[in-house]
Image (tube, rainbow, N blue to C red; front, side, top):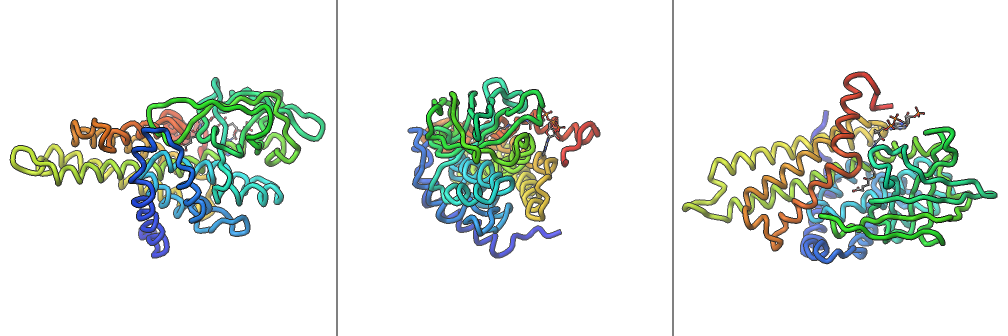
Length: 385
Ligand code: GRA
């Protein structure tokens, strides 16, 4: 067992911290308040190779791996939980799935512009009646000559309104059940695709939209993998997007702790720094220990993927589950420590608080993570298949 980051990983983490402090932290509050999508910063991250860590060099990636990607995602999320979503839209939920399941031509065409962020990506799974129950989706892609015609609607799709490309899922043959689900990479600028942005409590620099597909003509090469491979692609993709979601949650939880520590040392009441009060010390100790546990679970799941264990659903769920709980608890504790200064929109803790709860909703709710873990433990359904 090896718990030390290599010098190379340590250097990447520290460079990402400097990048976040310079390029993200000074603007993150305003982006959130004004609902600004920071395309320039996302492009800079693309140029720096942030979205190419698990991607092969031949497609423009850096091959530094999943743990490296997590470290970058954690640092970026310390500055803005909205910006960290790009790790999933540009890589884990799009380019990575294309690399794992696409033809050589699809890989060469779509991966480089996604990981450089020259093109913005999104992955569209959720529908109005299919959230946790992925396979209840109703979108269809009917065969039409060589290609397909896509119909249906997706909702709560991160970056959809800004996206050039989408990895989406639709039934090509409903009669075959889960084996009739297929995956498609689609151009978001073609006729029949419309998006409308949804308002939400937090993560407001990351636009979230509904998508309507109305008789969208897809060429044959939009199909990713064979017909019917959609179920395998969607669940293996969720197992990778959950990892960077966990890393993002760790980064946001750390931001909560950082804010609480700073306040504890600066603010005085009853003649001493508020950090001297044992009640606050309890909150600080709980935050620090829980963040470390969430971080270790996340790094372990990433490390397993670096060893080639991409099917580590159980360990990825542990990381996502514990991180979701940790980040929401840390945001609440930071709020208690900062009091009115936490509640004020002039300080970032109010934004952290609004952003934190997302980690119990996206990429499989806390209930779904618990279900996957419990069913594995009880022997009902193995998580790692
Ligand atoms: O037996 P079969 O041939 O029908 O195949 C089954 C199974 O073997 C079928 O899928 C196969 N499968 C897999 N194949 C490859 C299952 N898991 C895998 C896998 N990892 N790799 C159906 O399987 P099942 O277990 O019977 O499925 P189910 O009971 O219908 O659903 C299971 C479950 C509830 C866990 C699943 O639907 C699920 O994970 N739901 C949560 C949905 C979710 O996470 N949504 C996230 C949306 S994206 C998002 O939030 C973006 C946010 C952006 C951001 O902030 O980063």
